[in-house]
Length: 176
Length: 191
Image (cartoon, rainbow over all chains, first blue to last red; front, side, top):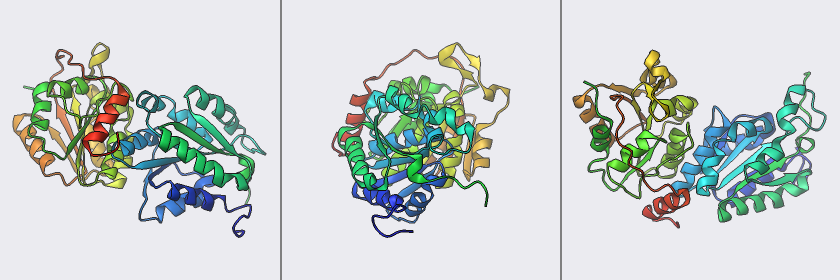
């Protein structure tokens, strides 16, 4: 791992941004790109980490958290966006904040062609769901975009997607 | 004789106390809760099918000193069965998941649901990890459930067998933003 400002410390930057935003519930479907952030959240006694069976559960979780006065974030891979679409109606109908942090697959140097169909439509689908979209391409962008995304979600009760480009995350290693 | 859904809802929320928050599922259980008496601590659902249980989990985690009752239908629960695993793994002590099971999709013409073919929701919940998962078949069982809800040390799952007849619709407020704001205000939160 590099030092602060290095190319691989973006999970730490995200964790710091979530803490600064006072996020208390983190729902996730396990994903290799989010592994370090998930580990940080699980180790944090002030965060209720909730392993989900499917991403749409996380949208409902975030709505319930907000009803009860807490802020939630959802960590998912791009394929999970498709699982959220109908449940995002709940957030749209009631103006619930939903902060989605999405690791991309199906773009830069993707080995698995089955990741491409959903990965390639993540942004248009989210736009149709009335989400605001911010995309981080390099580690240096992560702090600022994460802070802004959290502000838009929680201060303005919006659906916000912070997308982490596959190039930022790095290639999945298929042969070990 | 099966329980009446309206009487069952009334029994569960009667003398609810200051600390009971209720999330019904879309459709009949929302009408049942409205019929039992409006309250800002009810978060009626007009959509989000399959999401009631998870809304309840987020709420229960955020408000550990309150009791949260999700009271939904068999069809709504069937759409979000994964939530049984998610909630059982998290073990919130203050969450009760109560399903009014009539074996039909009442809002859409009474088509049989999976429970009509023998799928047992309380068995599924138990297998998912709800140590406390019960079937409620009659009035004494319902009285027992209401008592457990009052002294909730959950997570609790209950499948309440109700009659399949339809009750007249009682429609609550359907502005989602207004429902959210009054719910939060009732908890002393910024609306």
